[in-house]
Image (cartoon, rainbow, N blue to C red):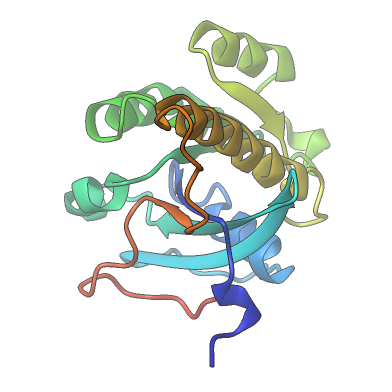
Length: 212
């Protein structure tokens, strides 16, 4: 018998990218399991977790993928980006270098991902106000220049984590549902089957247990 987590109207694949150590894994665990691990190790390879939210009365199941930021894992990029409809581009507000590297990550994303992918720039670790190295306005201007949405978060104290994922999933939903209406033949009913945007897990990818 299927669990409640199997019932959804849309399934969206969202990827987390950015340098190692910026808090991608903790953003994932905070949103999907409401957990934070101060001692979390660098992610090896790829893992993912899921969580469902409600948007406009529809159940949106997010399949959120997290990968290592280190260069040595870059061979996985094409499979990692395949089918992704959203991306959180993450840097650490206390480490300017992680922000400088955003430009390279953005280029990689645009080289490998779908042209219509929804991208959000995320300044993580905003609880480290006393160590801030990246001014909010600077990042906001970069986001506007590159047509990205922008938010600052803290996986440690939960600031804006829920909002970040809710916003990007809602934006994806509005784009997909509008396209669905536009593409539907006249006088036909839109299918009630779940809309899967992005692939399910590849068998050769290390899988993280799904969150219920």
